[in-house]
Length: 383
Image (cartoon, rainbow, N blue to C red):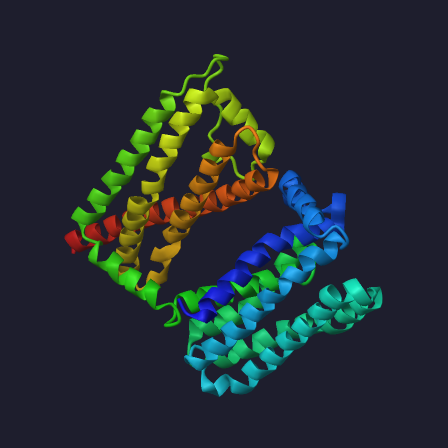
């Protein structure tokens, strides 16, 4: 991975994390319903911030973390232009957008970094008179840039032109600026970089998926994933539950769980159950590998046969990464029980939510690819 990809991904992850945090800090009980539903997780992180920085307001503590998001976008746009994704003919539109995001980053620095020490007036100047107008103008700039790119790359140009719609929608959803508007931009830039020559390791990975896209390889990988899933189910059934109500929902299927959830689950399991859950986690460290390879290979085969971008085959990689992260956190929770750090449990709940999102997307890709390949095969037989 090149620096542009790493910086952009760090910015995207930060933005995904910070958007609900800042929305809750700003809106409180008037926050969007979705954010209020994960209030316990958000407040755990806010309490952790107070411990680390007791003299700073929450608004500034978490607001200061947003600057790397702008850095990722700016450097990502620069690299997209350097490698030709943004054509030379769009140079003027590209430079205008870079200037606007540079101005927005300057305003963000004043609002979060300097206002904390030098007074609220800098927050007003930085956000209201510098950052917010720059973001507003960037909506228009994206449309002009997309229209210019469309002459060379129709699909990419249209994507740039549609981006302002997502920026406005995200702002309405989070009820907070700049995080709401910038999140779709950060995700978009990261996606473009991941599917470009800036991520050579992912290009090699797609080549590996191509070599695994035969019927035999996909079947063997799917069977290996099923064997792991079956082994985990067998171990789970061996967990003794004393209250007779059946086992509680596993931590693996509790998105946005908190320390209270972890304590309830592992208390119900008892010492023997926690030991068995340890071995479930060991099997679960293996499970995402064959699942990723099976889903990625069949998705690659379907996309290559239909003209879709083969980058879609890498979506299950997100499940692999977040599942292994989640399992590592659960192991830490087991070892620390009953003195589980609330911040660790809350972080684990967020990772579980991301994992389940990627798992759902992976299973959907698998079904679509399987049905699509079946349809293509039937058409060939009939013709």
